[in-house]
Length: 155
Image (tube, rainbow, N blue to C red; front, side, top):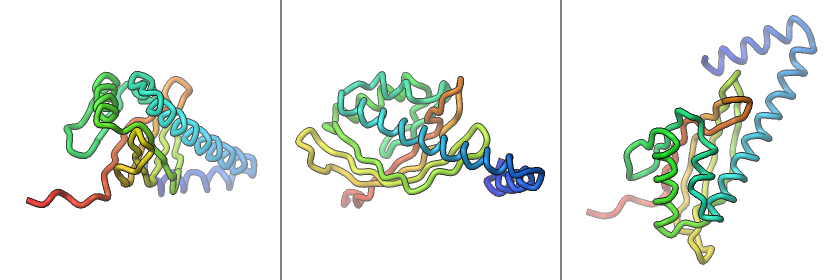
């Protein structure tokens, strides 16, 4: 469902009664809070070196599109990708969410990121887009793509 269609449906609900609009606003705020909580859990798991905890934050049919690698499909592949990130020396992340849009069982987040090494120094900066999916009553990362701001290596 497109965002324009979701917004149109929300407007239609609002025309039926003010209660629909108030409920829609509260739900959007709840989604933003859930996304921020999920991001804090992701960062905490990275800091602990817990790839399994990172993978558990993803939906059962999740895909991770990380730079320089194939698509990681499913939690086990995502766990391995997270372990690879940690094995490369990354032990911290700062996420700056720029926007969150909710539409039914899905939410869309975009932002910027800063990856840190074990010494706390920045090792990369980039940007990301995550599609979140409500699964079994919880918001899970469903499609996760990020890339670097670093220039590609010279050839």
